[in-house]
Image (cartoon, rainbow, N blue to C red; front, top):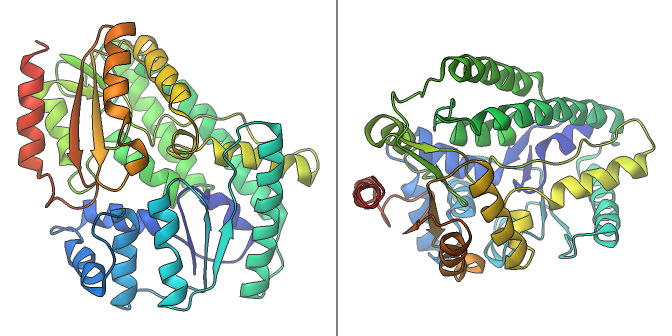
Length: 366
């Protein structure tokens, strides 16, 4: 059982006979799927002494480990995307004695940075093998990566259709596709999911149909949706006619990883993909590329507005909303609503509050 951070693509672990467990995925998707969420486990780790203002993505797994719900043989995580993450992971070694492998992810986006991170990926995977007593089978990893190359092609085609008016894809695609990227990456089931979504979306596109009946507003969420209650996605589609074209976890495109050349080339491409992963690129770079990306996306997808969800834990983005609001108005002429919240814990900003804020904001657009 290998725990890993979502910034370390799960298909990379296919080189071992193991069960990958995404620490953040466990927290957020159980928050979405369980009737009462996982506030119980946030409270357990909070009572233990962990700061409340860190990321609920790790806090849930930390609380569950204190409650002995799961046991891991090792954990692997890069030094990204933020200090909140990096400061939380050593808990698992200090308290639970799980071996922890830290993969050093550089800030520099370029050949030098990619080469460095490629070497870090290779060394960390080899170190993981020593801990669990297995030799890495990089051929198995290649097969999983080739499957994700297929998924990337399907996703590109899907997002071309999303540019259409009305958008032919339902809002619920966003949290569900984030889940498939985390939990079933590198598997044929992920390809099947995207093929089916593409078929459904093509039919709606050809008939100019909107899932919720009528598309009144096209929104982009440059950060995250509410994992503590993903029913918000349905409510926006059906009640407000607001399309969530995509959020930060879904607009994730990269060049295919070269699996046909030598191993060094493959790891170099793996590094490029890992450093360009959603939230990783945005959190390890200066604001300018993010602002430029948002302006370009607003134009490409004919967005009417942005909804910026500022997470309690994501302090590295704390000054971003005002900058982005000004840029979007100056460059595209569209407004942005900011909502402070905790992604997995509904007690900070409830679903009711979300709906009230969004309803009032929509009145200014119609």
